[in-house]
Length: 414
Image (cartoon, rainbow, N blue to C red; front, side, top):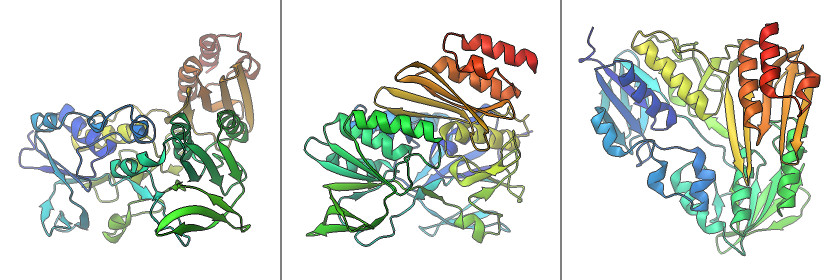
């Protein structure tokens, strides 16, 4: 069967959109593939933005997911600097901001998410930064130099990664977090405490349980962050990292089901059989629990891209994987497998001051693991979670016991 007269239109040139295009070709799609993206750049990686690209360790072209000429070789059309404005489901066409329209046989929405703006006075001042695109980081680079003081509003992973880079480059970083601890939304208190202590040892200041009421400035440039207490924290710039908003409004206007993202099934298909959604904009049932989740991670974007591409090509569905994430801060490499929500038991495994793992169990079953500089524990935990294993908690907490032996015992019990 040939699809030469058919078109897959992919909205979004990030990791998900790029992987979907590549997977379509690998699954044998021989029709037209178009990637339409808002940014002027070819598809690129976002994780290095807050680390190697911000620090200057890599140049812009090292961010590309593949050389631009490779897209031509794969017969994938890139339409850059183009924003989709409306989906006409009846006509099966998308209208763009330049007035053009593109018909599709299958539409893949990979529009990702945008930064959540800081809703206070002074947010428009020069020196108020966000971190989502290459352009964002190009502006931020001038703020992470010796003698500079940067206020980081939001103590999530993006904020902490930026604090690590700023500190390594000689700038002074102060993290301002509304919750009582950093990483409050994505980590247990023990992991939050580990990272706060690690940053403080390296000179980062933390102000937790503090609400930002405004930003102060002079001559149009930020000079400080005003807290609800009235205290003003002086700074040369401020990086806002208070979460993201899925770009699902266009899908909602087209009548697709949404709610913290675009609702899709296990094959990433919406209720419209010809429209798929993948990546940060998609809310999909988690195969281990059935709960509908929107997971912001590169591995999830890659997996969903393959699922959608396989469905479009009528190929067998790829095997579902355990969600996993990573974060690089200083010499600390965090690898997380699974989702810790709903845990009723925490086991900590400490091999050294900065090599440790946190295992999360529910009713005796391992459901997640946070592993710092401990790749063996991460790989073993990922496999145990996938099989529904119930490892011995005492063994998990003993660094003298090999994780491969713990994994074998847990698998045998299953």
